[in-house]
Image (cartoon, rainbow, N blue to C red):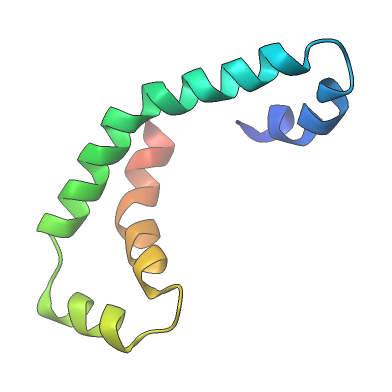
Length: 78
């Protein structure tokens, strides 16, 4: 969920609209899946040997960090 809505979710869920909010989140995630798949595939295709080494030698979040670095700008634009 975008900014303010994400922060408001706990309060809104206490109202009678909790089920509708859950459905909204699910539908947003389903709509985002094709875009996310494309962004992740492009990130993998652009991976260099150095990127792969950094992922293998990195910590528990090295793969997440790689994807964040490669996709965050375009994801923010979309």
